[in-house]
Amino acid sequence: MLLKKNKEIDVNNIPKHIAIIMDGNGRWAKKRGLSRTMGHREGSRTLKKIVEACYKLGVRYLTVYAFSTENWSRPKEEVDDLMKLLLEYLKNAERELKGKNVRIRVIGERRNLPEEIVNEIERVQKNTEHIEGLDFIIALNYGGRQELVDAVSHIVEDVRAGLISEVNEDIISQRLYTSGIPDPDLLIRTSGEMRISNFLIWQCCYTEFYFCDVLWPDFSEEHLIEAIISYQGRQRRFGGVK
Ligand code: IPE
Ligand code: IPE
Ligand code: MG
Image 1 (tube, rainbow, N blue to C red):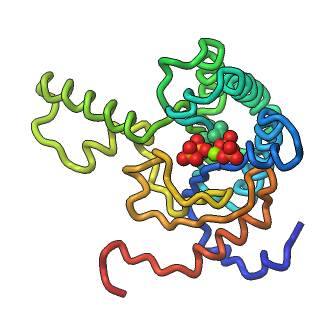
Image 2 (cartoon, rainbow, N blue to C red; image 1 turned 60 degrees about the vertical axis):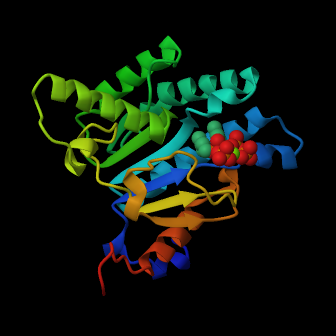
Image 3 (cartoon, rainbow, N blue to C red; image 1 turned 180 degrees about the vertical axis):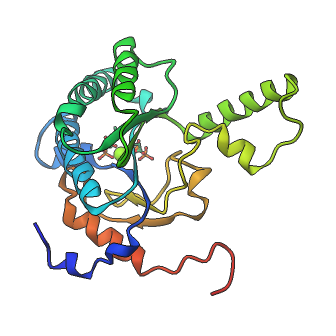
């Protein structure tokens, strides 16, 4: 599907790393008189389409926010359904992505996750680790503050062990879950909310933000292209003068 808008996209300036806060599943379902779980199910279909679209466009890294450390505060039934959906997603991931060069990596705190999910994460990461193409990073039980707490704990251990004697930005970046992954160029949040909700708080310090009103289950390749075109019209200055 080559869209009219596609013609305006500069294929030589595709953001290398796109991060997405996939928000609005609950409101999408409510509007239709459906359960929130149905909204999440539809949201998971959207994710499959957007991963393919990013792959086609030549995006190098895609990071999506699937479940935050704060999302445990939702009703147990919704959390259980979300865990089931995530498990299903991970189990089917390679089959769905067959023929495409996509490496899957999951970031976030493993400790509170159901064992089945942890096993599935390990399996899918191992099976795709050799693949070079799109790095698809799923933030699951992820919180930016927790990530920093973990990084600081590692630094303290390394200082005590005499492995490092000073702390700098690189030392911190290397101990984040995203170690080795460049910072996002573009962050998209759907559903009209304009906040970061504890997502990649260190990594997004110079990221371009794009907010749109579309609810995540309705987000399409066209919307993604609109976001990229908006990004391409920005002037990134990183504190300098241009
Ligand atoms: C995003 O949709 C999905 C997750 C947080 C897991 P929401 O469930 O937050 O949907 P709204 O914001 O209630 O519409
Ligand atoms: C952020 O959305 C988390 C995910 C999309 C997984 P939320 O819906 O949880 O964020 P808030 O509560 O509106 O800030
Ligand atoms: Mg929400």
